[in-house]
Length: 114
Image (cartoon, rainbow, N blue to C red):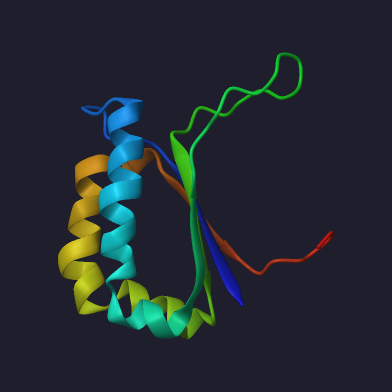
């Protein structure tokens, strides 16, 4: 299993609230519409920040994260090179993400508690 974690920065023309709404209501369903995702995506979650209690943690300056679990690296490639991703989902990303300041990490998970 392969996990892709993205630390997301919003497009500078959007408010944080506009970013969150678009990420959940528009982008999520678009990603779900990728036919290859039915075969290769095991899980996809979005996380958007809340204010932590004072004195607990220092919050990173990101507008959210997206985590996608793929069955294999080949499965990840099949989804991200698919026609629907390339022609519909990726162009949508350009409307609400600041790609230059979004970080992506692809790796294998090690379960510690679970």
